Every structure is written in structure tokens, then in C-alpha cells.
Length: 284
Image 1 (spheres, rainbow, N blue to C red):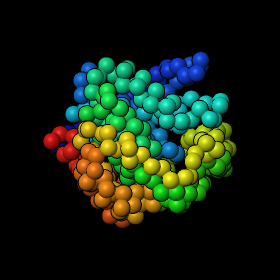
Image 2 (cartoon, rainbow, N blue to C red):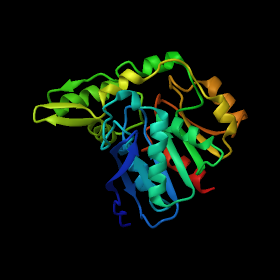
Image 3 (cartoon, rainbow, N blue to C red):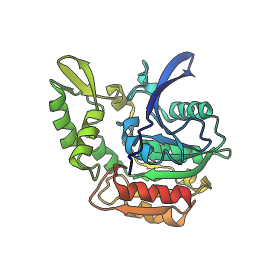
């Protein structure tokens, strides 16, 4: 059988925020003419490259758009770090959706990307038809947020890409499950080249100064979500607890939950079982 050719393309889009113009980067998979649009948004320290595998896998069904939120990946960094907030991210998401021309979209959100998705899905005029949450829910305990933030926001520098890869592998071990090839890509995707002799993590370290580690409670928003919801749950997650999962199953949109054993925060969205679960949910 002939292997399907990759369709990924890198793009930029300008948006306006607080009197300034910025660029947001996004990666697309599939045909831009496809009216079925899938928006993918990463976690707080991640970027759009996390969706390369699932984006290609679903490109036969969708025009897949994976966004680098401000301060990450190919998107501009904000001079005023206090501007990194959910209203900004919702504005960027709205601009990206408008760019596609779609009236409705499906959404995959990992961690922070899932919070953005829930916020938009709870709006009366939400464009989200189906929502996939990757290891996140409407309640996030403070203890888990503190643990997850242990190395976030540090301006960590490495003398070589190989040193950076080793650091990422050691400090992001909760993701997966990954093959060795998956780990290699994940780690490289986590880094940016600063100079010929220096590498760093591929996000603005200023993000760390504006992140709360208090309990996050958005059950009121959850009750307003009317679209179908699928939640992938890493059973070793520090951010998504069994109590939260049980309440998500029985309240609001009554989420369908897929358990991912041996994984914490977050499932990597690269293995066949996870991709199949998402495909089945989006197509049924």
C-alpha cells in the first residue's frame, strides 16, 4: 500500500491586540478547501508540533489547523507578559477560526488548549461542534498545578541540542506513550536554537511569571457546554483526578472518557489507540 504523502504546511496570521499587531504561527494538515475544520491547541509549555501525528492522521477528514499560542513556537512573544491570558488566547482562536471560513469547528485541546476550548464551548454562540479534552477538566487542583509547574518558566539554556533533548526527556517523562522515534521528535520540538552554541525551551520564559498555581474551578462553565465532549485521561495525571472525572461523566455535557494507562499529563496523541479513539468520537 502506498504511504499517504504528508500535507503539513507552516503559516502565519496577523492579529490585533491592545493597539499592536502580532503574528501567530499555525500548522495546517489536509486541504484548506475542506469545509470540515479541526482546531488543535497545545498545553501551556508546548506548541503546535505536538499535533503533527494526529493532524496527518485526520487530514483525510479535516482541514486541521494546529495553533502556536502567543509566546510559543512560531508565534510572537508579548512585551508585556501580563498580556498572556485567556482573553488573548480566545481572541487568537477566533481569528484563526475566522481565517478558515468555517461556521463550526471541532476542537482538540491539550491541557491549556482544553481550558481554552471549554471556555469557548461554554459561550452561547460557540462555534465548537465537538470538543476533545486531552487530560484536562473544569477543575484543576492547586497541588497538581504546583507539581506540573516545577520546571515551567525557567530560562533554561543548553550548550547543545543533545543536552536539551536529555533535559526534556527527563523532565517531560509523563507524556506518552512514546516510541524512541516519538521521544526524539517530541524533545526536538520542545527546543529552539538561540545561537550556534546555545539552545533553549521553545516558549517565552516570561510565561512563568503570570501563571497561577491556585485551584482552577470552572464547573459553572462546564454546565453551560452543550456540545459532545471526549476526555482522554492519563491515569497517572496530577492535574485530572478521579473525582473530577466522575463529575465530568455525570454533569454538564456528560463527557465520554477514554483511560490511558501508564501515562500522566499528558497523553501524546501519537499512538494508534489514542488517534482511533479521537477519530471514532469525531465521526460518530
